[in-house]
Length: 72
Image 1 (cartoon, rainbow, N blue to C red):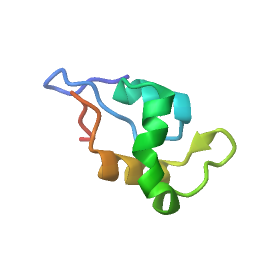
Image 2 (image 1 turned 120 degrees about the vertical axis):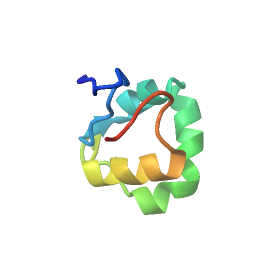
Image 3 (image 1 turned 90 degrees about the horizontal axis):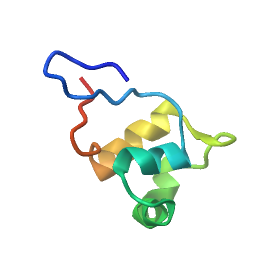
């Protein structure tokens, strides 16, 4: 991952697998599933194995950014 000027790792708005999202949030896949269930309709189904960048934006808006990450 690239780093910005303040040495804060940057979250890229790109397609992520469910497991990659769990790793970003540093939780188990089971916990992530619980967190995402209330927003299932808003997020929509994954395309193949991945959430699209648009879906990831919704996830970041609903759950907040992972600790110590910045979208800028």
